[in-house]
Length: 223
Image 1 (tube, helix red, strand yellow):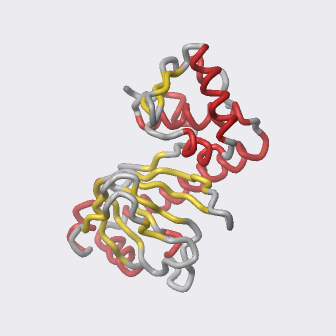
Image 2 (cartoon, one colour):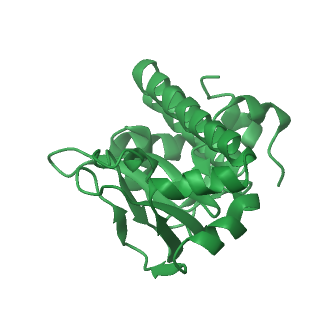
């Protein structure tokens, strides 16, 4: 399913394929890809330093936690993404936690490798700047959405952006995970899902849901 043309103006909660043309360079310069099983926390808030990673295969979630263990989901990462870039300055620890939600294949690297690749492929510097800009747009959009929109709009925004950027109508997330992603209570997510089911916008699939009508869903979005 192709993403609508107008979606190019909106940020995405899924980052993937941004560095596919540079994959051979990372394969050449990094250690061999290593398997990180589902559930592995590759980056840990306040702990991980210096190391960054190239994601060859798998899906990761980026989130932060409060002192009570509550999660706030920020983004998803797919293949041919770089992550851990908040550790670019070696003395600065990670400010987010990044966890595998599927088995994943990754290679670690440090900041000097980015300089090496920039020397070999000068266009990589621009690609990296675009990636940072993409991340910044997503974070700014998310902050704006969280601060001024009610629960239904936040949920609709997230759901619409997720299915259009992922090019799949299926959202394999539990209501608790949707609650973390949208900063809504689980009871609010349950109530909105029931309303949208009655309107024919979505159906639930046990652990996850499927969007049936993107046009009607978009009518509830805040953009």
